[in-house]
Image (cartoon, rainbow, N blue to C red; front, side):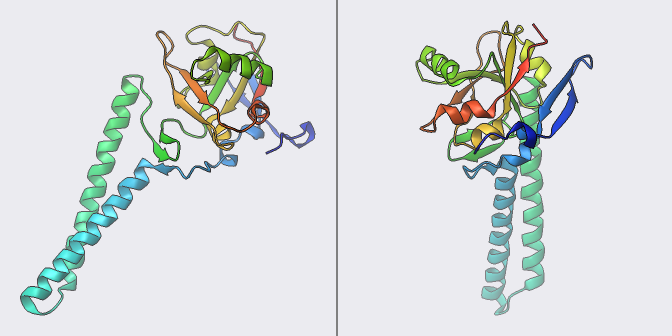
Length: 228
């Protein structure tokens, strides 16, 4: 992936949460451009697959049972039982998952939204990732050196605005901030994982891989820090 030249970037204006500051970001950060190459499967998709399997299982059981008893397959009963099982399993699964999501958000936690090659996924592709300062290669390498795991620190949270990330738990002191999104980071094979600290529930870690840090650096848009 190459960084777009300035002439190729289409800019969009987005009001910050406080409605006072106007932030300009480019469509280089548009979430739809960054499908997850890791094969992430959404939890809702897993529920649907399980419901289909349950429905097919009950359909098959009813068909075999009716054939053993009467010598004929009762297609009507098999279809009705299979369909009702599918509806019941899917409805209960979605209800349970939605309840889990609501409780997680109520307690300030990020719910699991999918499963991929990198493990459990907690963040949507469209979720902002914000860092203080300019995310140059040297800056990223320096930050990795401070973490015994070799991770890169940032702030992120589902449905959380740049306003909040730039000011919580306190504003970045840097003159600029760096902004990208989770989907962009996943597009180069890296991952974003929850790494909350005391007083900072939005702290996350960018887990690097063997991809050159130049690729990661290019994903960040530099913005003036109007929040400090």
